Length: 258
Image (cartoon, rainbow, N blue to C red; front, side):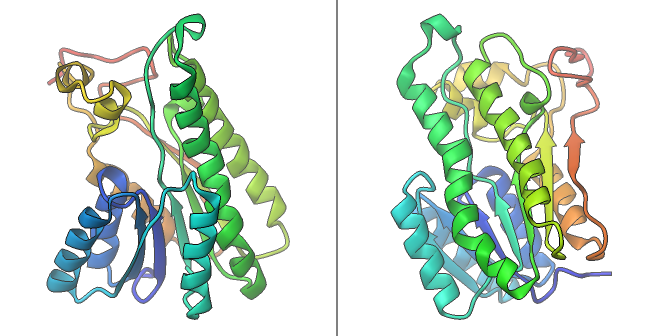
C-alpha cells in the first residue's frame, strides 16, 4: 500500500546524495516535495526533472541549515502558505576532516557540530511545532553507524552522530502523547559525496574508502527511508541500521567481496 502519495515531504540537503535519492524516490511515489539545500542551481535542476518525469509539485529554498535565521525564514514561508510537512527528513550532514583529536582542525569541528547537530535542531525547531499543533507528522533523522561505535580519528564526527541518536531518542520522548513519529536511519558505508567532502575534495582518497567491496548506494538508503515513512501510522521505527553485506561493524569490512 502506498501511504506516501499526496504527502508533503521536506528534505534537507536535497541537492545530492541521500537527499536527492529520497526526492526522486518520493516523487515516484506521488508525494509533493519541499527541498532545501545550499546549492540552488542543483535544486532547480532536480525540481525540473521531477516535474517533467512525475508532475511533482516542488517548493525550493536555498538554505544552509547552520543559518538559524535562514531556516526560520524558509519554514515561515512554507508553513505560512499552509504547507506544513507531513514528513521531515533531517538529512543535511557531513564529515569534515579525519585526524586525531590533538591534531584536529577546529574549523572542521565547527562545521560538523554546526551542521550535524545545530542544523538538525534549527530545522526541527522550525517545523516540529506545526506538526505538534495539528497532531500529525513524522521526523526522520539521518544518523550513521558512526553514532553506534567510534573509530580512530572519527572523534568529533562520531560525537555528532552519537548526538543525533540522543536527539532522536529525546524527540520521541518529547512528543509522547501525540501520534507524531520520530525515526532514526543509520547507514554504514555508502558511496555518495560524503568521503569527498570529508577529505576536502581529494577524490582519490575518497575512492579508496570503498575499494574492495560493494558499498550502499544513496538509492539503497532512500529505499529504507521510504519503507519507514510508508508504514502505518501506529508503527514507528525508532532506529534502523543498514550496512552493506561486506560490513559487519565500523571495523570489520570484507574488502575481498567485490
